[in-house]
Image (cartoon, rainbow, N blue to C red; front, side, top):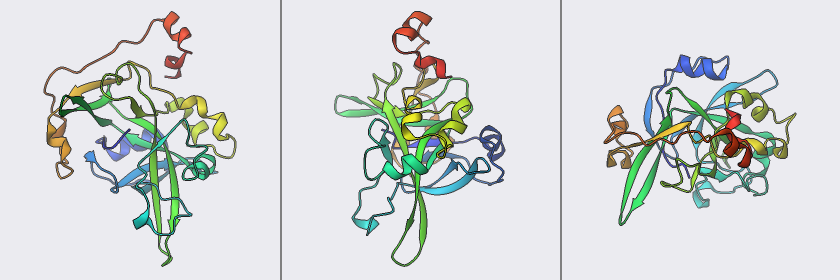
Length: 244
């Protein structure tokens, strides 16, 4: 699962990576939580576009959001079949820019937080789904969820799920809902390469949503890393490391 993440890159750096024409000005966020506004990149006939949405997808058919479960994640393996996500998988796929995410490893009765961030810095794109919900009063709200997949070798000792990451070379294919059906992009929803991220032990300050500052990412010890598998092992595992 992915219940907290960060986006700390300057807006112009995010714009260069995703290539949308808008010039939004958003502050760095070190501890983004569900129901808060998040930037996404959606597709269009004229290319990619920036959109600010609420984290927590509300399907269009929901009568009262107050009585509906908060959908911050969708399982990549079943999203195309589930009523809550089926329409978005066909018509409203998106990218969620991130500079890292947080996960907690259970140690006895305690949970130890980790910052999972790109080893080389910069940002990545989580696979996402978005919907526009029309309320009974006519008000519209744009919402989104992050797709998750099985853990890679780095994540497995911490948690059994992780966000699905779309490589830059596949941004256009993922966003092209006119030309690519859900089955056509299913190959993108697999664990990230083992050496894409590092896991940084951090303090429990991240547990509190109010702590949204750089201090939540201060390392307590050296990052945990996993090297990429050898070519022969990649072939045995289906070549998933070759996506990046």
